Length: 393
Image (cartoon, rainbow, N blue to C red; front, top):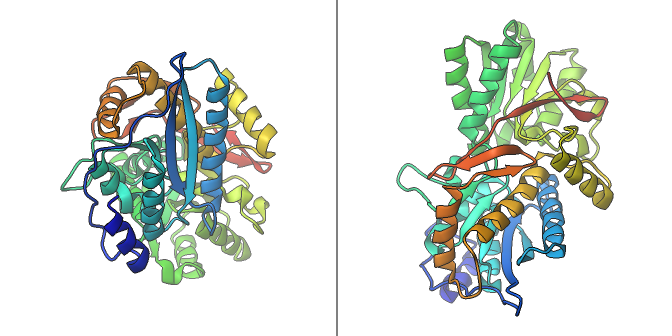
């Protein structure tokens, strides 16, 4: 990033989201005599603040993948750095600047959608290939006016989560009366809700109530819960993050309202929320690409490695991050990456590779990517049982 812009950003804390100018690109990592090359892998996410559960999971899993690859016989090695953006757009821009000055060649983008939307154009203009593990808004990979060809997603996009949730309910909860509580001023929640609403209508899901809230009303959900209960809803869809979801679960319990609660990937993390009574989440369904109790060899290996190192079961954000690192490694090997690639040339090569290759990971098999950066993989449903995520039938 141009030094003048860096100074202005640090002083003014970003008055606009204007893109930064293109540069010649960071040079490739150092290559040894045996052809081994080290790539600088960067990214940002909330390592502090209310959303730190997401950022820590991504950082931890990425580090496991990096350590495994660096200890293997692969000629591709990684130097990994993750900056704290506190899930804040302005701080994400500052984190991007730090990573660019460090020499980042490839990126894990951002953990959250809001941060990603703030820096999506920067990655595009600077030609740094980026794939987010968990930023699900389409704003990270394209807008109405522009496609960002080097920006990709490992997670489901918000529209896909909404559609998949409605489809799952139509198949598995056809007899349920459904209410929705969503956050209307959040790009993630509103994006999931809009597609869910359309698909639910098309599939005959019986939605009897839609209740919205905003940042200013995110601590008292009595109005929405009472309306859902009075409408006869016995399933409540919560396309929201786990912090407000935890409050909704407690307030529903306090008023004696016990529907089935159904969330998407933003709900993942609720079991590790400090001070939350996890018994309130018993029976909650989530649509996710990852089930920690799966018995395939790759998942068993990853879950054990994560538990051994961090003492807890990895969530979906961790699994997607683990897959991101291995997908980047596969693509780098496929293009024959070696010292001397300028960043812009590397971005073009990886973009072409990701839109043509398939990838098997812990969050799906035969994953592919469209030219708009969206991933194609099958969702899975899990249900919280005895305080852990268990694959749903």
